Amino acid sequence: MELNENAQIDTSQVDDRRGSGGGGIGGIPIPIGGGRGGLVGVIIAVLVALVGGGFGLNAAMDGGESTGDNTSLEQKCSADDALQQLDCRNTLYVNSIQAYWRTELPQEFGDQYQPSKTVFFSQAVNTGCGQADSGVGPFYCPADDLVYIDLTFYRVLAQELGAQGEFAQPYVLAHEYGHHVQDLLGTEAQMRRQQERDPGSANALSVKLELQADCYAGAWAKNATGTADERGQKIFTSITEQDIQQAIDTAEKIGDDAISERANRPVNPEEFTHGSSAQRKEWFMRGYSSGDPKSCDTFGNG
Image (cartoon, rainbow, N blue to C red; front, side, top):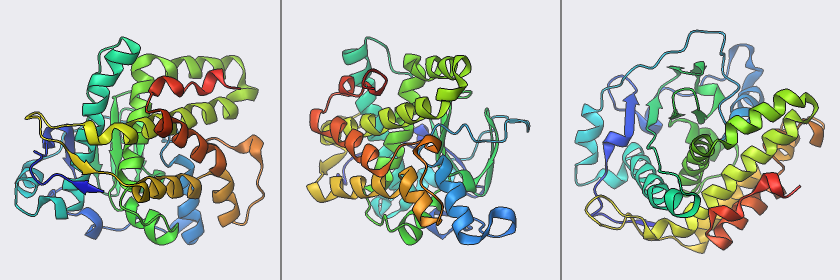
């Protein structure tokens, strides 16, 4: 994977709520003590919600949107070494994903794309879905139409789960923006209504939603080298098969069965909420192979 050094990083698509705006991978680590059951506990806590809809938040607590200060991020991402910075690269990934959907959504689904910001936070954050801490992993909140991520999550992903490739990061973000697209299209709301009508199928329906977001991520990956900034500069100059393999490797490592096995827990497909490793790989590859988000109809394929 190679990013274009001439691409303009649009920090307006990010809301930096990390205090001083520094941080990145060197920030405060995700807490692993307390009542979470140690390291395995935090991995499970993170991955139960990882690249998901963000519906495991504490909705009973008052959520509320606040605004960060992008001053430091803007300065960092306009410097010559911007692409060496974790937060700037992730901002550029967001730019690419939204550029893709800005064209693809009206073209393929007849709906105008409504942009969503990604919120960078440290340790904890208030959202429209309730209060969340870093332990829930990256998530999308349909109540405020925002993607949330503590960038220290990537350290857990790489060091504890072995998903070390750089392309794991845009895959995670593309999955979350897949949930935003589902929100815009009404897929998420329809799925929630189905869950209310048929609680016994709630987990199976959740899996379909998650696999569709994986498929949407694959469709973006196929077309990512065609995305450009507002000046027409390409964002990616190349994406290799090795990059795609890194996304697949990440998808497999965060399958429900892989998570259960890592925690030495029985693998029970009836308890799956995100899909097995094989399913997550299959649907990401379906989106990538076709490059067409219309191929991602998980709800119409059993």
